[in-house]
Image (cartoon, rainbow, N blue to C red; front, side, top):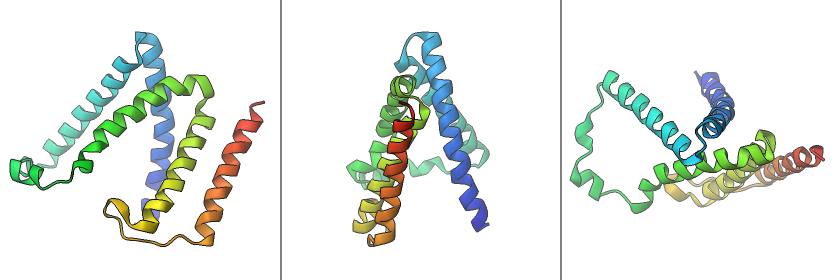
Length: 151
């Protein structure tokens, strides 16, 4: 099971690259990146609705009391996702997927180390160390080399 947990993120990473290509091509076909982003979210929403119905999820958790107890930032996921999807649609054709995702991954890993260190967003604090810093620096170096290789 632990190895499966490592395989799934690798497959998700490949899926995000495929998603960027599919959404970008849909945007070109439709002539509107925002409509393509909307279609991406609508199809994703329908998929999650079907999964929740099949899994017999308890929709009663969506009540006013539970919603009132959440913190404001817990609602940013969809907003950030829509900005991400639309940004990828707009930027991928201009810089290519390798540079785009190199920068995204470098940014994600750098911010993840900070979030881990301080235990933000409900995560357990995991102090930064030399190995983590080296990992981030190597990833940033790789991103630079990908950009440099395009010239």
